[in-house]
Length: 221
Image (cartoon, rainbow, N blue to C red; front, side):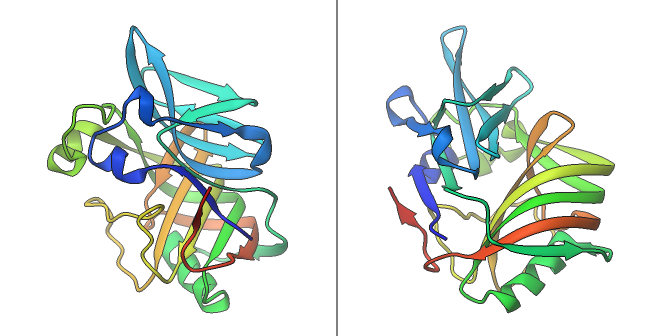
């Protein structure tokens, strides 16, 4: 399975998102994906957490949220063209980190994961200040990102997992409690919100679809 990336994650992390740096994501070409969505509001760019589930994009921020089936304007996006092939039934309690450790052992080259998970506790974050001010968001992380916990909730997820650090998709976050020998990036659609999922989130059961990625480093379109 090829993971295609558009835009630049570095632009987001460095606060350098502008109108000219936005990529046009054709939603109908992606069964699943994650990244950021962009909208103009009162003349300013608003950047929101985004996910594509079954060829429909969902984006959320406290200021604006929307659903899109044609084009998503995005400073950064990573997605796959079809549903992953292999069915995986999750029926025991674990953390998301523990699940990914199990998957990377089974898929050592890395994999993509989509599906539905029942979380006992999902810790998710979303953007509250758009990264458009030419400053590293990690220098004032609490000003840019807010956390929300969801208890006993079902979420649609999409994740990319790799044994190698690939800065087109992955980055190290100061709010992650888990550490590992692999890298992951996960978004979820939950209660009408799109959030970045922290890997210490706890899950109970779920139905997932998994497939090996073609290369340990994903490809730019």
